Image 1: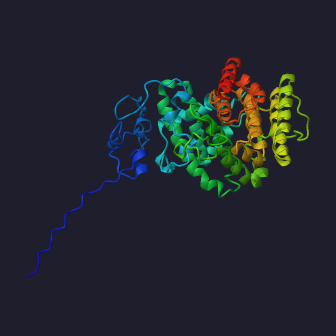
Image 2: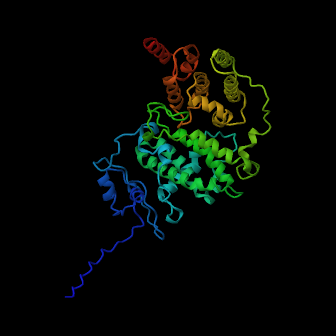
Image 3: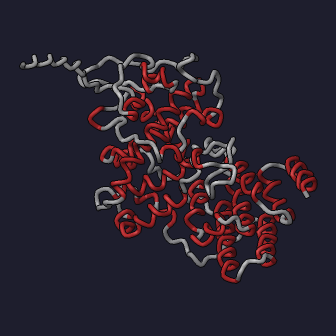
Length: 433
């Protein structure tokens, strides 16, 4: 007996969504595009990107203003945000960005948003000055020359937008959730797009890659949460991998610079060449005079390095690193052609890999050298994203420092935290001892 063929149940039609939220794209699930929060994000209890970013459809001229974030059970937005430090927990740090599958966000064919245009306008009209500590007597390469490169290389454009959005979050704290979310998304996209570019360096992209590699370290500093131990030098013992302490941003920065080495002759003659002009002609063997009070403290640091139980090879590494700290203080005091921010952050490229390796091992003498550098970093706190960073870095190192070095940690503590904190720290050390 022949069986009747079973009726095939028609498949439910699947309507592909092209305007879904970022979170659904990352989960690879269909987004129902419900505004202001899609159903999936409401179910998962995550903040939906529709709250901040609405792509401009081709041919559409209506301006859509991103809504203010609201407090509800489906949108865990804090009620008040007074600074980037207060709100940074809402934005992915670069450690989290490095693991975010974000290349689908704002691809060139999708277009940029009205929010992005606002952010770019901010960069051109003052954001770059604030982020880079630009002074009126300096040559400015961070607006027109860099943006012109960014128009050709989307990874650099996303990075510029990430930095500018941080500045907007600082000056408009009531809208910080919107700007910080946008900043994190742009940073994630920038890093994803940059990785294949740096692996395929050529005469066309080397200038944008150089700008990106210089800026990424600044962005890593800017997004450090000062309420947690600093991860600039090493992931402290308190930090777990789930908190993002496994990405070494100094190594990424220095590695990128090393890859760019062969392209530096072209970079120096390229569209960003004026950035190098103040550094040309500096004698590497020059003397590094410093102000008297700083000089005496650096001499004391030298005594500590001699008394330490490190090997002769390690002492050589330490004295060279201490010499770069002296050079930074000297240039900050007497070189008025180079931006102070550039001097302070050049220190990270001056010290050797061997010194960084000693920092990772938490060698006390290496920590002492880095603690003295924190005084130079403290002098830059007029830059909005550096505020609190010297204190955070110094405290992180003090927490892992062995007892017995209080004589040499006194000056960095006093200059960074102030005399009152020095007394509290001394009392705490006595109690522990």
